Image 1: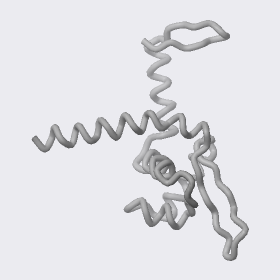
Image 2: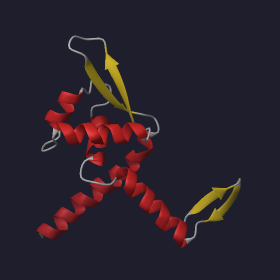
Image 3: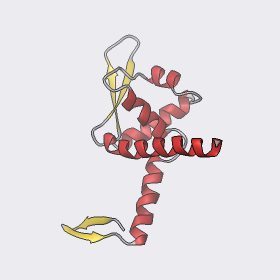
Image 4: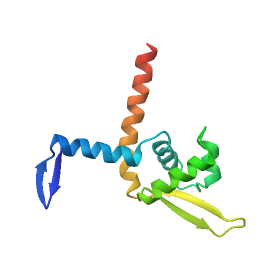
Length: 122
């Protein structure tokens, strides 16, 4: 069981609350691209992450899908968008402080994925 704070009181989350939390998390982070985009932005922290660079470096993502996913991540306060004063106009993206709270989840997924790949191969 997971502990949660409700009105300042620490309580154990019910199974229903845990399942709702998983649903909420998957609605925000689910799909093929969002976690990959966030992992990519984190790996290039401190570098200029323009739309075109992100699209080039995340294999297989279309411009339309990248745009949609970045908008969703921005709406959920996980990614920030900065319009740069260039000609033509360039837009850069970065992880927000809140977005960085997702990184332990991606670390765990990477570790599990690497271990799973090894297990399946052997």
